[in-house]
Structures are given as C-alpha cells and as structure tokens.
Image 1 (tube, rainbow, N blue to C red):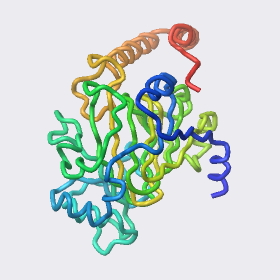
Image 2 (image 1 turned 120 degrees about the vertical axis):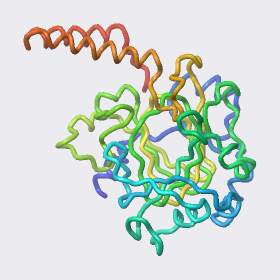
Image 3 (image 1 turned 135 degrees about the horizontal axis):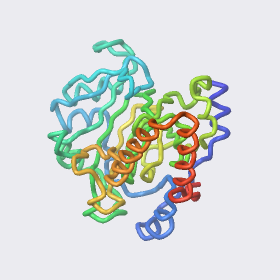
Length: 321
C-alpha cells in the first residue's frame, strides 16, 4: 500500500474540464493528442436509470460471453481467466456481488463483460445492436463525424477488477456510467519501458511492479485519473492505459477512426490491430534484423546501432508530453 501511495503521489493528474463543447474539444483539446477527463456532459438517462435491477430487466436473459478470473488482475498474455456464458440478467447480479453463492472458480471470482459483434470475425461491437434497449438511454458525445465511428463497446466489471495495460490504435471515449474507476496511463513515447508483447504490457501490477523483472518500468511517466459516474475520459490512440474498477462498474467505450479509413486493417473488429503501414514496417524491420544475423557479432552490433540512429533521426517526435 505504501509503495502504491508513493507512485500515486508521483503521478501526473489528468486535467478535468467541465462542460466542453464539440467546438472547443476539436479546436483546443483534440489536436494536443493528450488524455483529458470531460465532466458535466449530457449523457442521457443512463446515469440515473442504470441500477442493477433495471439493467437486469431491460435486456433480460440473452446469453453473454464473459471473462471470469479467480484473481483481480486479469492477464491477457498468460490467460489467467476463463470464458463462460451466462444469461445477461444473472451475469449483472453476479458481477455486482462481492461473494458468490453460485460461481465457476471461487466464491470471490471477478467478472468482466466486453461486448462483441454478432460475428466477432466480421462485426464490431455496437451497443445499438447488442443492447438496443440500453442504447436508448445513453447519449454518445458527438465529437467526431458519423463516418468516423468504429465501435461502441459495452463493459461491465466487478469491483476490484484490474485490466491489463494496453494501447488501442483508434481514439476513444471511456464513458463511465456507473461506479468509480481508476485509470493509469502512459505516453506512447514511453513504450520502451513498458515491456510490450504486441499491444499489451507484461507489467500487470502498475502500483507494485516487480522491479527486478521490469527495471526500466520506473522510467515510464505515470498519468492518472479517477473516473466518477458521469465522467468521460478521452484516450488518444496509442496511449497505454490500465483500468481498475474500484466499484461495480458499467461503462461504454466509443472508438472512432482518427486516420483515413484505408489506414486500418479491414479484418480488425476489436480496434487493436496496428495500422497497415505500421504492420508492413514491422515486417520489413524483422526481415532486416534477420539479415543482420549473417554478420559477426561485432558488425551486427555496429549496424544495428546505426539502424536505431536512423530511425531516431527520421521518425521520432518529442511532443507527447
């Protein structure tokens, strides 16, 4: 606990802005490419209607696929959770419990719903299609053009659940409707310190990291906010985020395309595949590194360093914050 408190004191608190209009967001906030918490937005009746009873009754007993974990910190890399199916009304009530009379793994297991499309290989999540009754209750801030819309992901989390650190390739709003969340974020420029595997970090416990295993993690600059019910967090593409549900939570993530539509992988239904040009560049780099293996170690080291310098000169930027 003491280590966590020290890290939180060193964290940079995200700016909280009240009643931001679309015009102000697009003019003053969006171009900065930094996360910010928006408060006082008109989100509709969801902020008062979405009680456990209402959620259970509104969408009834349709089956949903959920993550179930025996531990609070979910790890997508090691898959320390299982997938199970429950009727939506039963799932909501279980997710709101602390101790369970009925359970899959343990009586204090954690639940997480991340909505998906009808066919996960072809369709993106859209609350209007998967949860049409609940969709009528929520106003999504229209701070982007309709043709930029990618997905609206409905999420429900047990209290205490912590999701792995990751980045998305599209801009998004995290709309916190019910409950409190703590969100820890890291700039894209700190990727070298986050021990990445694809789009995800190996560092699960960002409050008490294993510094022997992840010594560079201390170099990553930590940003943080607490989302109360009704808050909206703007997360620009490529910003890493780790989300902790301090209470039973209901939220909606809305993703939109910041780049031209043709930049994205057309097979990507989750919004987490790197842009096409980035994927090609990584493939080319992998082939270049394979070619370097033909050289003796001394030469390989020298030309690898030259490659790094060339990348720094041609591609790095220094204004992420």
